[in-house]
Amino acid sequence: MPTIFTPRADWWLRGIGGALIAGLVLALGALYYYASPKFTRVGYAPAQPVPFSHSIHAGRLGLDCRYCHVHVEDSPHATVPPTQTCNNCHTLVRNTDPILSQVREGWDPDPRKADAKAPIPWKRVHRVPDFAYFNHAAHVKAGVDCTSCHGPIAQMDVVRHAEPLTMGWCLDCHRHPVSTEQKVNPPQSCQGCHR
Ligand code: HEC
Ligand code: HEC
Ligand code: HEC
Ligand code: HEC
Ligand code: HEC
Image 1: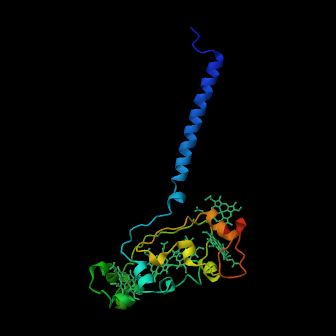
Image 2 (image 1 turned 135 degrees about the vertical axis):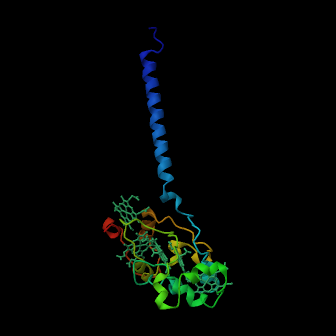
Image 3 (image 1 turned 120 degrees about the horizontal axis):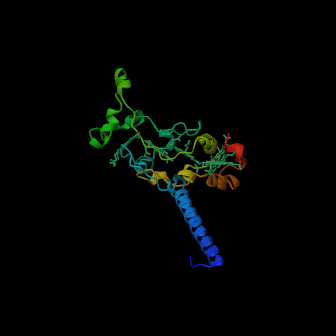
């Protein structure tokens, strides 16, 4: 067998080969990490089953957020309104428009038929994982505005995920809270949010 590579060149070639493989593994890892929902959820704006527009209802009609998100001030969850809230108006307003048929069918004023109705299957836009604790009431009471975390909802026709809602993002504000209250002390320790 004639020697093609000196032992030293062989050592170098193995080194380069190893580095290439390690580089490829790193690149794939980075692709997987940055393409994960954490980095792609800003801008997420799923089409909803009924084309409900915040820009019409909260913007042009000027309805208060709490008219529909009734629990936002006194509970961890803001919650999305039941169809009945929509029909406070839509039994009268645009009450033959096909765009609202699912809203009309989702609610019947006759209480004997009420349980036959299915809620509108709204698609969830914002979510923090179960292992992190989040509470709307604590923030709203401390004077943190909805727009700090959800962007300009009152101008949106379709709700769009505006902020990353990652741990780093939560902590950025907890270190320098944007709040109208004077004395706030948001948790920065792990147990504050991971209970
Ligand atoms: C007339 C009722 C109504 C009013 C008023 C209203 N909303 Fe909503 N909101 C809804 C409904 C219905 C949904 C679910 C459908 C959707 O996402 O568009 C929703 C969804 C949302 C979501 C997304 C929920 C998710 O899935 O993550 C946010 C955030 C939100 N509203 C904030 C606001 C804010 C802030 C205001 C006040 C500026 C407001 N809403 C006023 C009815 C309302
Ligand atoms: C306070 C009264 C009120 C409530 C409550 C209300 N709406 Fe409306 N909605 C209106 C009015 C008024 C219009 C008509 C705006 C126009 O035609 O310019 C409208 C328009 C709409 C439209 C038509 C939008 C378009 O593009 O033409 C949809 C769909 C709709 N509403 C869905 C809902 C849903 C779903 C809810 C409950 C989550 C709801 N509305 C709650 C008053 C209300
Ligand atoms: C400090 C940031 C912050 C503020 C302020 C805030 N939200 Fe949220 N909102 C969130 C987060 C985070 C979620 C996801 C919660 C989860 O998965 O449990 C969320 C979810 C929601 C949802 C989906 C349903 C739910 O309860 O999870 C609605 C509706 C909503 N917010 C409305 C509002 C409204 C209306 C206001 C203002 C009155 C508001 N939010 C203020 C961060 C915020
Ligand atoms: C724009 C500023 C801001 C953002 C963004 C924010 N917070 Fe807060 N947070 C506050 C303020 C202000 C308080 C109230 C502190 C007080 O009352 O002393 C608070 C309080 C809390 C508390 C303590 C409330 C209680 O019930 O014990 C928790 C837990 C919390 N935040 C979790 C989160 C999480 C999780 C996120 C991200 C999803 C987040 N926060 C994003 C400003 C913010
Ligand atoms: C202000 C609230 C808050 C505090 C304080 C906090 N976390 Fe988190 N943490 C979160 C939220 C929200 C998530 C989910 C982030 C997401 O979904 O992208 C998270 C996610 C995580 C994850 C999962 C990996 C990741 O990055 O998504 C780990 C691990 C973690 N936290 C550890 C810690 C440790 C350790 C501490 C203390 C040094 C800590 N956290 C303090 C809110 C907090």
